[in-house]
Image (tube, rainbow, N blue to C red; front, side, top):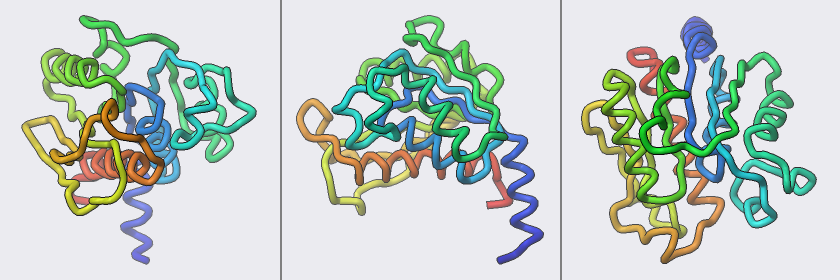
Length: 198
């Protein structure tokens, strides 16, 4: 391992911040991946409580059912690295103000459930924070077919994408594929932050 490069990367990540909209299957796993990579600050937004049905693909545990996701993910992160700064917002993102919690992060990750909300969120970030890179995912449902996943870039929008995948309303959500896409999002965020140091 190149120690000089490792130290340079770790320092850059320690001083970087990522915001995540939605702390379910994509968001909770992306957050944990970023913490393990050494990110210094996270801004996490979700309004939901943990349900038993979440446990098959989200980074929560049986004894955390019924608790607010943002409070629990903060606790789980602290068990991995207590030095990470974690800001949480227990709120539902509403049209017209979705961008507000993410004004002072380096990269935004979209990890929302509903297609309409995902689209509205991405549009708001691009409109209101035009210099802010945003990472999104589409085609999370199902299993297998990893070779179809690609990265698409449209200006500041970076998307991990499988155009042939069915929607989650028409297919099942399973941990391997969800976590693959979550880690792809986290990896894209690192690529943006590190730039030439990747």
